[in-house]
Structure formats: C-alpha cells, structure tokens
Length: 347
Ligand code: FES
Image (tube, protein in one colour):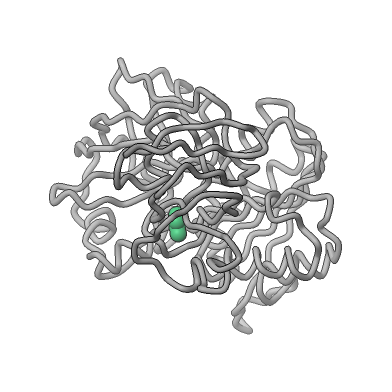
C-alpha cells in the first residue's frame, strides 16, 4: 500500500511505494530531504515525526538512539512508512532539485595537492546536462557496482571555464582502499570512470540572512571551496568565518588559496586550527579541535548558520556541542560527513 509523506512546515508531500524507504521516495520525486550516508550510520537524515507510524531497518544507535526513537525521531534513510506520515524538516529543498544523471567521465588531470591528497579533474561528455549546487557530491560507480562519494570542489559556474565541461574533486589516499590506491597508483589521465550525481543536501541556503560558519576537517574542504567560489560569484556578502582543522600545518593543502580569497572577499575571515603540531612545524596559530575553536570565538550561535564537512567524529561533535552549548537551532546545522573512509572499509 502506498502512503503519503508530508513535510512540515513547507507542506510538501510525496508518496512511498510499499516497502520503500522514505528518503528514497523523496529523492525519486524530487523532494530533497537532508541525508549523507544513506545506511543508518551518520544521523544526517534524522527528522522529527509529527504523526504516523514508521518502522526502521538496521541502523546504528549513534545515528538514532532508542531514546530519540521513543521521542518520535526517525531516520528517513532506513525508515519505511506504515501509514500516512507527517515529518518536520526545515531543510527540505525546493521543487525542481537537480535531477540525478549518470555519465562517463574522463580523467583530465591528476594533480597532487599534498602527499595524500589528489586533485582529480574530470571531463564530462560535451552533451552532458549535469547541474549541481556548490557543496553537493557525486558517486563513482566502480566495476563491481560499489560506489565512492566525493564532493565537487569547483563551483557550478566554473563547469565550462576551460571550454570543455570540467569539475574538480579532492581525494584523500586511504591506504588499502581499492579505489584510492588506484587513484594514487596506476590511474592515468584519459581513463574513463562512471559517475552519478548530483547528490546531497549540503549546500548554501542562499535566501537566509544569517552570518555563516564554515567548518571543515581535512578534505572536507572540497565542498567548502566550491561554496566559497559560489559565494564570490553570486556576490553573497554575508559575514562568513571559515574554520579549517587539520592535524599538521601541511595538511591545510590549499591554505594559500584560502588566504588569496580573503583579499577578494572582505566579508570572509579564516581560522586554521591544528590539532597535532610538532615542534618543527613552529605552529603559531590556533590549536586543538576545530569545532572547539568555533565555540571559543562564538559562545552564542543562536543567530548563525553552520555548514560542516569532514570526519563523522568532527561533524557529530560539532552538531551536538553547537546545539547544546551555543544555542544553534538544529535546523541551521548543515552537514556532510564525507565518506573517504568508505574506501578503506570496502577496499
Ligand atoms: Fe540516514 Fe546517514 S543515517 S543518511
């Protein structure tokens, strides 16, 4: 039996087929609910259920605890409706979210950005009609059918910058992972890969007026870079502070690029935060956990909007502490827990 899912406060609705997960049904019908891992691990798709009955497939307690479920929260990525359901999500995207496309992509450039970070530039087919928001990601579909997700590191307006359709990704090497071992080993320019996208609900809510905190760890910088390019291109001048966390200074692999943007974007400031500097690094800047640096500078986040991308541990801690300790409204926290770890796990 099909059921109707209604999303408040927008009032948008869609139908689920028998046994279909709520998130999948939403994506299929162009309703962009928030999500990231799609397998019950990250908690990005957690929303409050206002009415109706939902049963969950397997998921981790850290994504949705029994207590949260008892309070009426659900994970849309592994929840199946048993009746008409009303949920609350302020992050639902507008009608006409960009359609998901599949296409071949040619490796145009492999450029090391650090010892363990590669810029992979992909050339898309000339007749492609890929559209995406800065901050979204694509998936590589590997020969065995497994997938790897990477955020676009270049803003959409740059797609045709060089005359041919190109986009950039930043890949971190996960030793033992079959995909990134290949990227850092035998991959050659002109190799053809299969991609699918865009995916994800992690992108700038352009109509909001709030000041912005951008927060990244490691290659979580990639979608943040695309967002900064997009903000500059669109003339968005909301006060923005970018915190980039890394273990050691050389892990801030495009530090000079960010500093270059500061001169061009007067509303932007930048706080690099290092967690494990060695004496030879002679690090003079901020130290510790990157999300703690945000809290030191902004003990009150009640009027901010936060965009966080990085390791699941960083994103989880930031969401919890910003909401509980600094009064950030839960719906103003936008996150993408990037999935390069998946290569190691599945490799
Ligand atoms: Fe649902 Fe990650 S737990 S998207």
